[in-house]
Length: 228
Image 1 (cartoon, rainbow, N blue to C red):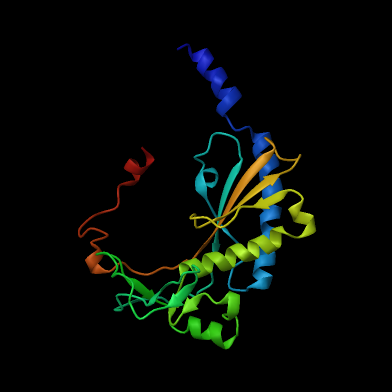
Image 2 (spheres, rainbow, N blue to C red):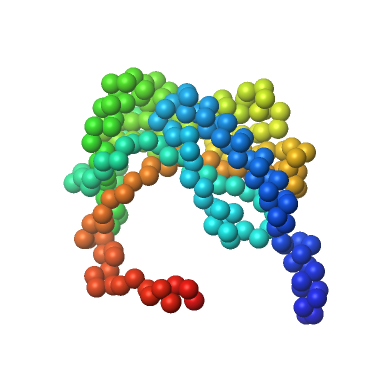
């Protein structure tokens, strides 16, 4: 195929113009900041400053700037350690509510272990920030689906405010870990933007020997190889 045709197709259908990118980024960032500020004010455990992830922020996206991904950190402190515990005791009842059970969850696969967050859950309990719909735990376990439901509920509250709901729609809870927002506004290049907000726990903890990673004796690739 003639290179001229390919170049024209790229320019017309693939390339993300700087003006469109700037226009959409300038619209999305303050909106996301406003939503996360509301979430934080309602539950201080969710941090205001998100982590920018996804194809746009990794400079891998070449089509329109119409999808943005943000990871929202659940503040669990900075003290983590591996724990010898092998399972947890919770499950779902007939109403899909998370409940304590006498039967443990299946053991984690080989190479997977549980981490301990010393004192943090007790701190939440002492502050009364872990009660009722805001409860994210059972015993000493932070339950992922509880985190997801709490976060999604707060995002929905934020979106339902009059100044936001005119042009933002929050999708219902799905299997995805993220709360997905669809934003429609005349100022958006392309008309519509999709924003995923996903709660995460950010931790730094050394690998255990049984993980087999990093591989014994392995070296980092040379700078020259990385450049290639």
